[in-house]
Length: 68
Image (cartoon, rainbow, N blue to C red):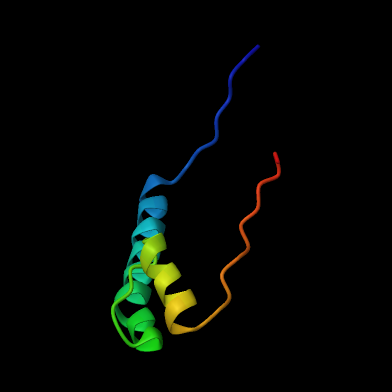
């Protein structure tokens, strides 16, 4: 059996990754603080939960266990 690969333009891929990284950083540093009103790390479950449940007043999800 012969193994085959695909040709990837690594320069274009790196450029695309850089653009996406810039957009994520822009969103995290400019857009999200404007919407929330204070700095918020979207990668922190504790900060996101505090914002959603304490500040917005959303109901917390019910906890259940399937194995019981």
